[in-house]
Length: 368
Image (tube, rainbow, N blue to C red; front, side, top):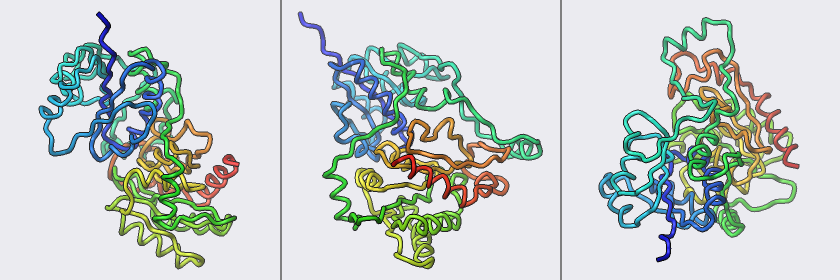
């Protein structure tokens, strides 16, 4: 009697940046299991991210209206032979348990280990992001130290690779990568006015951050850096963001226009996730906060200059790209991992536009 074909479910991550950082693990899993059917379960809002990715055979999307029992019932019908939960949540493990999948793999965490058949301990050098209290922030400010630095082995990419290694995949890191076709980039050029022009590069600016204001470099500094880079490179600017970033993007686009030259193109809230990926790929440089589109830009191959304040580039930066540079401050309270700064946002305010401009020019030089 022939063996049952291997069918592996991967429970995907819920934030755009985390999802992009999981692509090296998915690529390694495909290499290790070339004959298996690989299915990714993802939130509906991220479904477009996974379209036409060669390391996946199927994408299952669930909506916010579906409860855990409805999702698990759909999974049970698929008769998966194994499943890997990339999130650390109890819900992700419970979904796999309710679906009756015989082999269930995920990170060992309190409240969910009993739901897994293989609970994977943290890798050596793992760091859990600790959100500092306002009191801890104040104590750090009163110290004489600088920002806390973490080992490169603590990057989230290594965590996801460590989980897929339980299925025989190589833990060796790869840069995050997502495929976007030439047809898709040409479509966004035509739809949004991103036409090619000899000697006039398109630079992208992403001033928002869904996580919270502690990750947002001040708007006036984005404008100052954008104007300086336009003077040095004769670039044209396109501003990106979600629907909640429209007012911020309009303000920045208007300030760039007042600085002389062509007005910036404002696409905030106008693109689908797939269109955003293609538009980022069009860019010759993307200047951004630490946020999902930062990871997306690096994964589609755009040169990226990223600004880090309350978070850590060692944990979530675009460090696996040779076409990326990071600008960061050295405030002793950083990284605090807070959504809102309890003091004066000094981790970001001490990053001057000239530092960001220099990092961006280094990106351009490295990109050839």
